[in-house]
Length: 548
Length: 90
Image (spheres, rainbow over the protein chains, first blue to last red):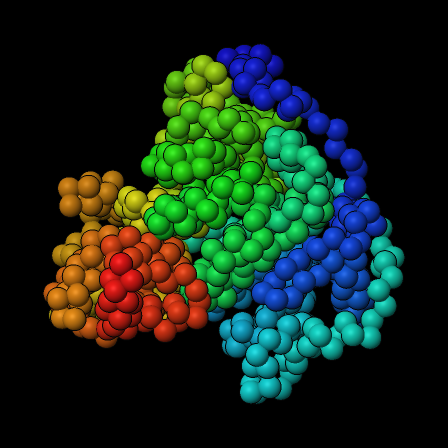
């Protein structure tokens, strides 16, 4: 197809309330907090266990923390790492950084050791905000990072039992820091084009990379999503915040959308496995209007007794799913129980959140990721000849363009130029578009495994396994899993004369990688299939898995 | 109780798609999480659904979950105790 003659059949599929284009205000993202706190100061902003904050209280705490950070030397452009689960401290830390023009380094709390060091050093983070629960992991590596300050929200007083090496910054306790600070607005001019977030994401080469998202990217992304839903007059309705804020889906659909709309964020931190059991109680208590979740969580909830699920989920007017394809059985069961449709979205860290949504409230065809959002262009391009746009039904690479697309990868112009061309972002996802403009994913260009909404590259696991003294070679693939979408399977070969068992290697994995990357199964084989050039033939591993 | 333990091992391995795990070799005190079966929070929610569906026993609170969802023995004991109560109520 010729340039400039793009086929955009999706526009005809938009619901009536959705315009083709949206006016985007030229504001920094924290402006929404100021507006909401001024308009609805006494509405509840956050509930966390038995603690509640109104929007006035939230804005006050954000300002106090911002002043404390400023006194510690934070200024515009500085990077502040947030190493936090969904807690009020994340919310305060995020907006305090925004108000100072600092850049949030959004880190998964699952990472540790070398990976944590790499993210902190590569981003140049000078400060980290975290919980005492994570303090030990941070202090194990702090001497090898450029961190100058640690702000710790002390929940259990763990830091009191810790010893600190000479020369490393002592933790400053969040509660003490903000107590004496002023609640006035910090005086810093932040522009829409300023960097707001470094969003860390997995890398196919085994090293993480950070998407640079500007204030303007975030504002655009949230407004696109909200316009798409077109929900009005919900007042201080609750939003279930289960998916982590350190993921773009959680940051956008839970945190930023709530602050824009003046919603009540119900935080479920998932500090440990048992926290998930609080979910049903929270649903019953708060009756949320919106519940964004990953497919595995929807699948797990729909595995609960039908009465229980129905009772808790019928109040959810906006059930959304993203992070991975939603299995058809989940959609069908949800619809049968509630009469509603889970609205599937497609997005990436590099796109601030979503580029596609299924129409709300009607939903899209089963298996579709939906339609491009307003002001978002999308096309499927030929894999061999990327300048050729594929015809409807043809499979190629999905590329997207829009105001939500990142500025680039942090300090990585080479990688940026490989994926961002003339404003088009090459997603690496293989898909097709139908005649009506609905998009479908069919595979990945690379070997990415999406398990429970987490993006995992096989090399991230293989590199760790190969460090085990008994393991000679390792190959990792994703195998279909009814609940998680994909489960991780590792195949290893051992050095000559070595003996080992699965439990031993599993333990090694748990000690050396985040929980979500630990394989579900580890098979010991005589060899890993490779081509004559030594390249691993994952296709054969996948075929073997299919054959059982 | 032994019958229930055996049944739970087979059920959990099958329904949670635990590859390469032989239910017959699992000890009664094999932990469900971390270095045991390595279940995660999504598995935990699915497990709660299975127990409710097949035994009519609800584990919908953190307080109960912490005590019961530890290993096969703790789970079997809880099911045994509460299933009886449920039967009496019927």
